Structure formats: C-alpha cells, structure tokens
Image (cartoon, rainbow over all chains, first blue to last red; front, side, top):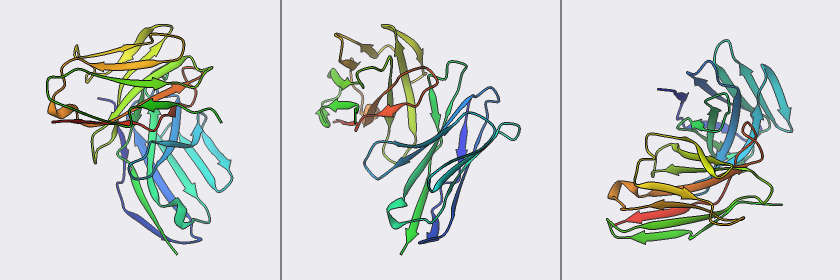
Length: 112
Length: 113
C-alpha cells in the first residue's frame, strides 16, 4: 500500500514567522511531488511542485525534496493569516505519474 | 486564466439511483482525473483517463463507476447505483502531460440519502 504521511497538526505560528510542513512517502520510485493548499469546503489549489532533490523557491514558499530519505517539506516564510488552510502533500505514484496519492494534510493556523 | 469547471455543484440523490457528474477540463489538457474526498478525510484517487481510455484506476473505482468523454470538451463520471458511502466531494482534475501539475475543479458535493 503506497502511503503519504503528514502530521495533521494543527500547526500554529504567529504572523511573520516561518511555517514548516513535512511529508514522507513510501514509494521509492515516485518522481513527482506536489504541495496543494485547501481551504475548508474548497478544492485543492497548487502551491508548488518539485521533481529533483534539493530546494525550489517560489516567492515566500520553498519546497525541499530528499529522495534518499523519502521526505518532502514546504517552508512558508513571512506567514500571513491568509495562509491559514490545510496543506496537502501529493505524490505521483508511478512512472507515468498519473495517479496522485495525497496525505491527510496539515492544518496551518497563522495568528495576527 | 483557464480553469476546470464542474456541474452540478451539489447533487442529492436516493440510494440506488444513477448519477452523472460532469466536468469540463482545461481546453488543451490531455489527461483527466477523478478524485473524491469524504468529509474530514483525505483526497483519494479514483481514475485517470488519456487518449479515450482509462490509464489507471484505484480499488475504489469498481464496476459501479464509469467514465466517458462524450465529446471534445466534457468528461463525466457515472455512478450506476449509488450507496450511502458514495457521499463525498468529487473533484475532476486535468493536466497537460502525465507528470505535469494536475489542476482541480471546484468539486461536486454528492449526497446520497
């Protein structure tokens, strides 16, 4: 059974702080990794994707991938109250990458 | 900006009835997907569709489910005989290629009574 694990939280940070979200996955052959944000009652919205080991930065967001440790993380710098949401880690589970396996999500709460 | 659209936004049906959920993927995308999310639980993959055939499906996608691309724009999910446990939010997604980002529609909330 291919699994994606996330700490469900809630993760609470003050406005302006760095929020660190983590994810581990079980399928060593996975090649594509995504972070989605989901507000309550809404659909997943892409934040970032990463395919290669290392860091990838986009504005306030940095995704980190370590395939040897089967670990993906998302850092949110200068957290804002509008960042309060559930963050979903998703992994493409086969060579074609067509199916995404999602973690349960980490709920982030940013207080002003 | 192009987006995935889904209709209806909310569908209420009686157990045992057939339902069809509709999606219009992003126009130049070639890969289409259905996912579901039971309230309070994680998003679960159902099926992927490419070149007019199913490319992958999960254990959830049993004989009660089917997908179709009836024309050049729509992509549908049919549940033949709904059960109470089919109550969930159903998301359609599309991507330009197999490893590319999947963009999600707003979802259809299915309630089976």
